[in-house]
Length: 257
Image (tube, rainbow, N blue to C red):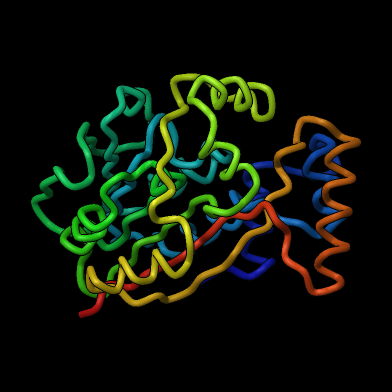
């Protein structure tokens, strides 16, 4: 279910265009042979969306892929239907949706289940994990897939976020990623390990089809010298068989027939 490096390169080309004329960030990552967690997620969803796919994007907000509008537009055109689900008013600004529902996941009632359900940076905000997983089971067709992309509970940024107020999250998101306050929400981290996700999804009728822990060097993305050092640290740790401490989780779960 997870894409190859060739697949990821094809999808990131929609985002960056010709690397020779792209900014320093994409060229630097290409030099190190590194793909961001967003790159992995976008390519994974790209491989799962087909012309017959009825797709539900949970917690979509204003964007399907915030860093790859070109790929989002093409997938929205490719699929049979794309429904966005989000209790935030941000969903009203999403240009890619065919249908939209402004409510919580467990409150959503669909006329028919979906082939694909995606949750991009959503489950860290869920405070009722059993109810959310049960809703995913109800909303996914037998043989369909749920893709969950989230932060790891024990990554440094998550640990800091867990013990600091939301106002601090606003400031750090603006500094490090130029994020807006209206796109920052309280976190709970009740579904943010592989074992926790696997257990919840198994209870809801899913099997883990694929899973990957994705090293995340984007904390320093706005600062070229620091990002070069961070990528160098990632490559060094990988060379000696050690995982990178800051990482994201990407799981694909298949609904049992």
